[in-house]
Every structure is written in C-alpha cells, then in structure tokens.
Image (cartoon, rainbow, N blue to C red; front, top):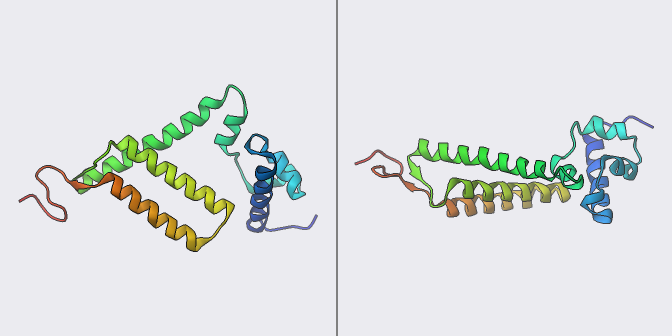
Length: 155
C-alpha cells in the first residue's frame, strides 16, 4: 500500500466514516468499520486519529452512557465559567442563566462542527457561525451591570 500523507488520509477516512454512518447508523460507526470502508488497516485509522470520539463510543456501549452526559456537562460548565468571567470583566449582565447560555452555545458549535465535517463548505460555515454568534448574543442580551455604562465608566 503506497504512503499517503496524514492530511490526505484523514479526509479519506472522514468520507469513509460518513458513508458508514449513513449506511449503518451511529451505533455501528466504529474505527474498524471505517478502516474497512476506506480499505486501510485499523492501525492507519488510529495513527491518523489518535483518539476515538467519546460521545459515540459511550452511547454505543451499554453502561457507559453516563460518560457522554459527563462530557457535555463538562463542556457546558467550562463554557458557562468563560461566559461568566467575560461578562464580569466587561461589567455586563446576561439575560439568561450562564448555564443555559453555555448549553445553547455548545449545541450551536457542536452542530456547526458536525455540519462542516459532513460537508466542508467554508463559505457556508462562516455564514452559519455568524448566525450562531448573533443568536447567542441576542439570547444573552448583554446589558451594563448596575452602576456601569457600556463602553465607559459608571457615571
């Protein structure tokens, strides 16, 4: 088998994964199935992609479902802390609880990433990212904290 650069091979493997996902569903999407679909050794897949996707793996294995829940809970907590810190540093308030804002932001980004992996259209991805950004800002409806003005000091 001729050598193929990892950047090229990764695109081939993503396409193979897409075909397996469409044909067999998420429950049968394994690294072994992707390797077989791409016509490469399993070791090639693990070389190009150093780790498995935790969510799909956890949802497919009985008893590990809580790992997927933990993963997204952790994402949301981290993003909520970032949002809260950013608002505090800017002297602003948020119209919704930070945990709600974080879950919406994580869901939006997760969806955009999956769409891009399935159909890497950079122009569309930029437009969609702008739309999600505007949606999150609208949901947050940032306003000056008590005693603060946007863009300046309290007066």
